[in-house]
Image 1: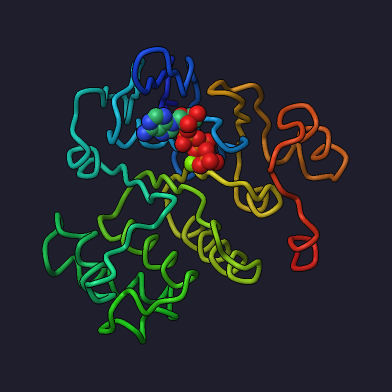
Image 2: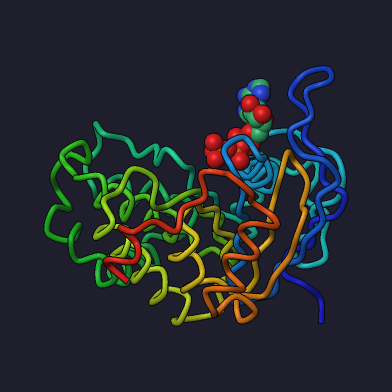
Length: 253
Ligand SMILES: Nc1ncnc2c1ncn2[C@@H]1O[C@H](COP(=O)(O)OP(=O)(O)OP(=O)(O)O)[C@@H](O)[C@H]1O
Ligand SMILES: [Mg+2]
């Protein structure tokens, strides 16, 4: 089977000598959720941004067997690669509805309406705030809007950069529940960057562990179902990092 996404030998440099990502390989199958886990500065966002075409990179990024290098971000979006950045970047001055429309600017108006309806079903919290300014939304609602906006173009691959960042545990749970619903609903593949291992475990199929720009380990989620195996993976691959399996998560699990 051909992978939906094949990342081969991917390297990212920020200026001379500053290598953030080093020869990273991984595959993403259709309808699977692949997690990238690692400490702050491990290179997770750089990998996602390189796949989305937001920063230059070396190596191969094959999407449905085709090389993405050299294609601008908007062309990658057209083909189905959508990045939801870690700092949400919704447009506060625009209404919730306008933010969603922005995400679907490339698709015909009729289709856009259908898709918006589906997204609002998924995120009822923002459905009744559609005409208000996006700046009024809470952090969790903003994250829902950002994910909803990402879904507007009908992606095949959603690159989600720390969707739980800055959210209270209860909201993290809600966002992850919706992500679970999204993944259950079709053949959308997701690459998920997270610090929250327990939440990530619930959603993902494959996990890649990153340290200093390199992939240092791989596990299938089913290999990490029991606490001992999970703790072992944390000790082996993540060491004393900020990756959390916090009491908060457990309390809400
Ligand atoms: N625009 C930039 N210019 C220079 N260096 C950068 C830039 N962006 C990231 N870096 C460096 O690249 C490395 C990887 O950063 P990246 O943002 O990819 O990490 P990350 O794993 O997403 O971290 P975090 O969990 O904090 O979001 C870090 O050493 C960072 O300092
Ligand atoms: Mg990051």
